[in-house]
Length: 215
Ligand code: PRP
Image (cartoon, rainbow, N blue to C red; front, side, top):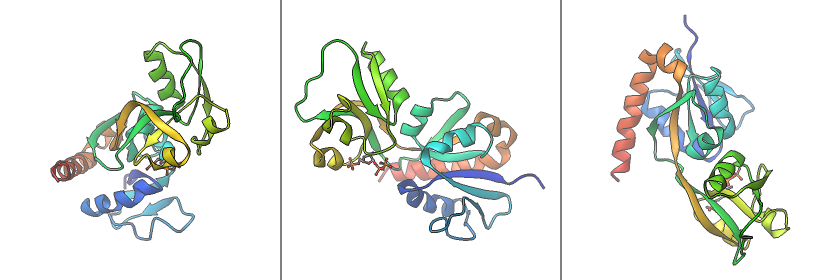
């Protein structure tokens, strides 16, 4: 038998929102996806298996053929920025905004480099370049909000949902870089080699997203 279709999911918040979609697709993991150290899961469908990865690892797994398709945030996809991936469905889940933020009331120097703390280094570089500004990026993996408070950076680039994290840390949102939501992501290779299996998934998820967007 051909290797099963491999579907990469992001652990964390997005995983909880993804489970009902799997159910809709008739894909049921044979054991719970959370609470164990396992990373690969069989499903009720012998032709489908699941990987549970860090959100930032979904794009490289899909692009490099470790998985055929996956679900990833647009923020993560913008940072990964690959031509080898297509995003056939905007699922409209995990909506947030990629924004710049500073200490409340802070003014930025008019010229010269700006120090930017972020896990979205590529996004930040592209955004500030589009404004004619060069940056000194500081790559962080979490707690970006602390950086301006301790003088590590002038600005952060991060995802903002309610804005509570910024507020709780004496920061304020400044410029909107992009809106983000979860996308179905498929490698361009799998789109050709696994089209028969992937096409119904795309159409079912598209239908679900269309219905969901109306409410
Ligand atoms: C994100 C982000 C902020 C927070 C923003 O972190 O990095 O810290 O959410 O949400 P808010 O505007 O509603 O306060 P997340 O909890 O996703 O975890 P992370 O630090 O692993 O990215």
